[in-house]
Length: 420
Ligand code: EPU
Image (cartoon, rainbow, N blue to C red):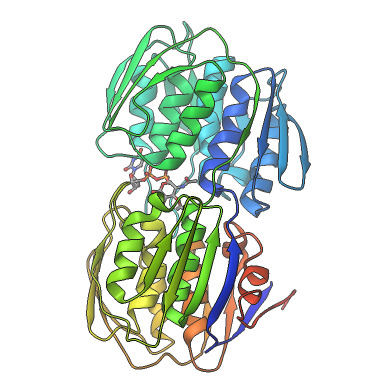
């Protein structure tokens, strides 16, 4: 298994071009199953999650040409309607293929995604959406077996929680359902808006994207198109936090700064200076102390749970006490024990982490537990004194394109050792 070695204590200075968004690419690729025509996605990041999804789509019948960051998908015919455990367990988002398979083929069997390191992650709200839209299902042998005998029927649905995945799922079912549908308490994340806008351009009738109520009038069919995947706000946020930790000056290109507004404000309160322009942001930390700042994760436009671990790494070096509350996932603190190996002082009280800043972090061998947790270890290692080794970095490769190249280009010292 690959290993990452980081020589800490170097400031970051330079420019990073932010890649296309993983969490927008995945549902956009899945939605390609809704049409017989070709969907052309530009700016798709080269990540292992994208590879996993390509594999699954090919099994289902898609022809895919992937050239650099351009992915062309054509699914003239669905040839299989079963998404196997082996693929769905690798990546929860694969579960979402259930929606276009039902919409286009009328039935599907998709493995239950199961729990994962960050929480139990049940599927009760997905089942509710299917029930409301005239899809019968059984959960048997670890699979959801779904059928829509008389076709999808539009419906009024209210989510108990603003779930990103359930909003993607609803969009993909309702666009081809008979009649009108509405979703109350829908997620407003930019990735949901990206999927919705793409579906609109394919011919879907959707209103209310980016708000807590989405209305859809079903159409007969959707057409193909060529579209750009938006940039990855979580990748951008991760590098912004890394800069806040190491000090220096960083310019992040290809971003929409308003999408990480809440993070930028939190970083400013830690003492970072920021200057946003049209599609970039510059950040600078001088030699001032890192002021402790409290955060609480929430659905968009709240503080993203996908940046909580990284922000916690930053707070380990603050000049006070920071309170970090996780409101989205019930077990997203796996990084705490690894950050403690650097000498961080963090106490957990249920969904609250109390981080008491220490003077310095000392390098240590650590292990990544999930994708965003691995990013927090990278950030801690960049600021720690000495040489850190990080194991299980396949987690990192799921979501960060060319991380070593990007950080080394700004003065970091990161090496990957293959097959360690
Ligand atoms: N939930 C239920 N029942 C359901 C569905 C969700 O209780 O039927 C709960 C979840 O267990 C969780 C909460 O609702 O506690 C929110 O989960 P959500 O459905 O919004 O998450 P998701 O769609 O599974 C996506 C991202 C995650 C990101 C979350 C929250 C992708 C591929 N995944 O997951 O990204 O953390 O939204 O913003 O888009 C990551 O990229 O590292 C990652 C985990």
